Length: 235
Ligand code: ATP
Image 1 (cartoon, rainbow, N blue to C red):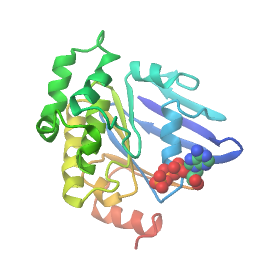
Image 2 (tube, protein in one colour):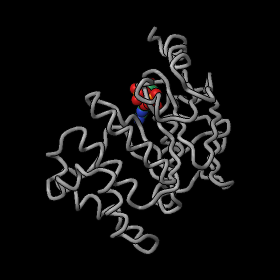
Image 3 (tube, rainbow, N blue to C red):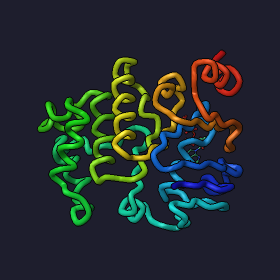
Image 4 (cartoon, rainbow, N blue to C red):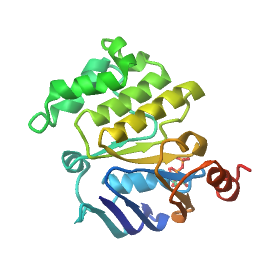
């Protein structure tokens, strides 16, 4: 479904990605693990059209995405939940979700999608008329995911959904991520918290200084331990 081929790029003169190769098949949850600052976020920005790479290809169902605007990518079914959530804090939960659905009303049944998002995150239903900015960190993360998911993307990219959340909330958010995948959305999940990703991902890539250095077909406890020791410095 998604194929990143030898992608090189960064910010102006600063090269962050040194030839990244990664594949996501339809129906999978693929984890991208790596320590602070190795370029995971930068790669998601390249895939979602926010940064133009200086080399390589990003193929989505065989089509090269390089140069396509983020808005068009969204219409093509690619959604990105950036790090730090970026919900509209002066809009209610309901308004945040409706804004996301506005752009795709010709393509999806908005009422149905709203219900789907609220069923996944019952907490958001309880907070439906509350301003985004007054939600807890966990609720804001739920809203950010719900908003990206409402337009019915085929591929959902999540950038560190566990960041800043209490362990019990992380567990609940990750359970929902698994549910989203089972409902048919393919997921590329960037995480620093490898333990949180353990029960969610089908396959894992590990990134170090702008390149993939390891791939695991399965992430079990012993593989997780090895990745932590060898690549993440968390022995
Ligand atoms: P983290 O998990 O800490 O977010 P990451 O693996 O996602 O790390 P990136 O956010 O991709 O890492 O950052 C990779 C490098 O790019 C870092 O050294 C960072 O300082 C640098 N960087 C990020 N954004 C910019 C920017 N707008 N301009 C210049 N350099 C940047």
